[in-house]
Length: 211
Image: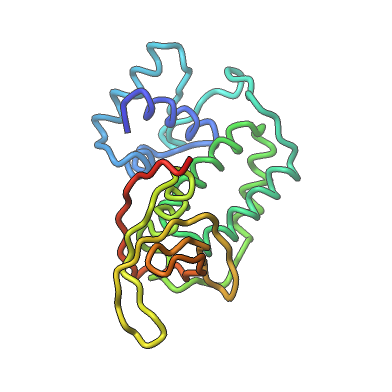
């Protein structure tokens, strides 16, 4: 993440919370304390009123920012609920992007609304997912292939556990049977097929101009 992007992300992250310890900022942005201190100083220099209290951590004064988008409490809660369910069925990379999106939603809430939303979040429980199914970026890779019109080179295992190399052209994602699938054109079979997306698959991409 470039420094300008990180500074913008820090503003959004702080504004989405009542207070944030420096350790949380380190964890979120994967940088040292010294880097966080430098970033906070830079924000002060451009007029962002980041404040600090020993028992609270860092926070941005409520009086400073007018939210660019307005959400009602119920709209925010609906998005939080959707995000909680999505976390259960997505990979790590997709979850990371959704967490950033939720920070932007919380950014637009008042302090009272944030309190309400945080209370709801603390009391939402979903059945735990198998840990291995969240690892890696497999879902994110397929999403990118669809968006960027890429062919995926995959290792495919059939019902007899026989491995083969396939070039597939994903055109969509669907979720059923507690698993993600992609509908894709298989260049080997010369037809559209339904592939279950598995963490055990290996993926590499090549760009093709389909249009």
